[in-house]
Image (cartoon, rainbow, N blue to C red; front, side):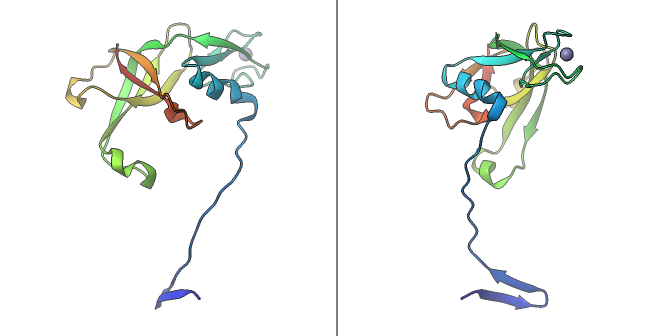
Length: 147
Ligand SMILES: [Zn+2]
């Protein structure tokens, strides 16, 4: 039986649950690396572009990229202090997202920054990766702290 809350507009209550099998496909190595407390990036053998987050195919020339182990220390490229978020992150508010620059990597990596007050964050600040011991096989298995 469906609960009806109103007729104009029609509003009903229904349970909603989705469970699915998610394939990481060609970027599986990145997520497997997080369990080993490593960051895996990809490098294009044709043009030399480096990608983190990794790409299977080069975004510049389309060649299939190769894996390599990226540094786990970098510096803050930019950051945001979030006071609003999706339902899954409401309990974490406020939190800080950073784009991290790594030596030898052409892209920046979006992640969380913890262990520092927002007013103490400085662009260019050195940071280092930390990894969750119990992985959940998602991008939140890595986060950053001041180096
Ligand atoms: Zn390329």
